Image (tube, rainbow, N blue to C red):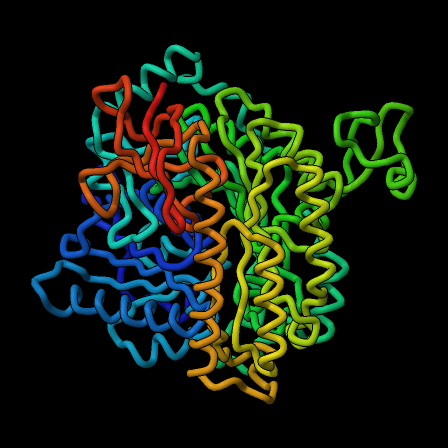
Length: 580
C-alpha cells in the first residue's frame, strides 16, 4: 500500500550505528475499534525502533487517529489535528512530523493534505502497516519475541502510554504490578507456551454474499469522495501483529472482525472500513491466550457487528452433539464429514465456546449484536458459561417501523419486544444495552411517541441516545422531511429523562446484592471514593460501582477482583462496600 502523498523526507535509521529512537506521541479518538487500530500502529512503531511518549510536547512524531462517524466526532478530530499542529510550529514543541490516520482520512484524504499544510502523511483504516513509512521509519526485520504484546511496566508507562488519549488509563501503582506478578506466578500463567502462537489459519473467503450483493447495489461507493482510494480497506490484524496495550492492565479489547455489510442509511462506516471480514477462531484464541498469560482477565470482543462473525470464513469441522451445537437440520444443509463431525462455517457461539473456558479468563463479553442475528444458540451459549457476561449490546436505533424502514433497518417495536423477552427467558438476569437515533428524517411526533412507549415497556438497563447527524455520503443525506435541530435536541432530552427514571428504578433494585467487581482505582470524580465495574458493566460506556468502604482490606489493588455488596443507588451508578 502506498501513502498519499509520497513522503519526501529521509527515513529515520535505527541501526546500531544510529541508535536514535524517535519519540512518537499518539492521540486516539473514537470507539474501541479505533483504539485497537491505535494499539496496532503503536506496536508496529515500537517494534521498528520508536519510543512512545505520553507528552505531546516531547514527541518528534505526532499521530492523530481520527473518528468520522458523526459531525461532532469529525469536529473533534479536526480540532485535535490543529492542536497537534501547534506542537509542530510553536509552543516550544519538538515535533517534526504530523501523521493523520483513521476514518477521517478515508473520507477527506486529499482535503486534509491540501488544507492543513503541516500534515506530512495520512494513513487510512486499511493501511495500518503504512504507519512506518508515514513516520519515516524503516520496516524492521521480523521480531523474534515469543509474544506480540507489550504490557506496560511501571518504568515503561511514561514512555509507552498513548498521549492525550481519553480511552487510556494505564495503571501506575506498583502494588498492582506486584500483585499481578505474584498472581501469575502462583497460577503458572507467567510463562507463555510457544504453542499458543499459530501461523497457519484458514484464509477468509472474499466476502459474505450479502456484502457482494450490496456492493453491486452501490453500498460501498466512494466515487463522490474526492481523493478516496478506489479499493476498499481490506486490512485485518492477527495475533502475530504487535500491539501496545493502552487499556488498564486487567482488561483488553480483541477485534474479531472488521468492516460492515449492512445497508443502514444513516451510516458511512461501510465506506470507511470496507466489507465485513472475520478473523479465524484460531488466531483470536491465540491472541486471547497471549493476553491472559500477561495478566489480562477481562476480554471484550469488538466488531461493527459481532453477530455476523464467521459468515465469510471457510467451512470447518465441528463435533456433533457438543454443547450448544447446531441442530441436525442445520448441519444437513452444510454436509457432514463423518458420524461425529459436521462441516459448516464458524459462528459467534463457536468463538465464545472456544474462549470461555480458557484458564485465567474471568470475564468475557462482546459488542455489538444485530437484532435479527441473536439466535437461540447464541443465547444458550451466553447462559451456559459463568465467564460470559449476561449482557447484550443491541443498537436498535429506533422502534417505529416507519423510521426503521427509512433507516433500511427493518423491524418493529413488537418484534423487538419479542426478541428481548426471548433473550431474557433464555438468559436469566440478562442486562440489555441499546442506542437510539432521534430526529431521523421523517420522524414524526407519533414515531417518537412510539419510541418512548417502547423504552418504557422494554425496561432497558443501559441506553445511549444520538441526535441525528446529516452525513454526506450516507443514504439518509438525500432523504426529505428533515427534522429541525431544536426538535431533535428536545426529543433527545425527553428520551434521556425517561431513561433516567427507568435506570434509577433498576439501580435501586441492586441494593443488598452481592457481586464481583473489577476495581479500577480512584474515582474520576473524587479522591474520596474508588471505582470499579461489575460483569454487566462494559468498559467506558456503562455505569460504575463507587466504593466507599474497603471492608477487610487496608488498601485495594487496581486491576483486581473483589466481592462487594451494593449499599446505595443513584441514577446510573451504585455505591458498594468490599466484603471479601
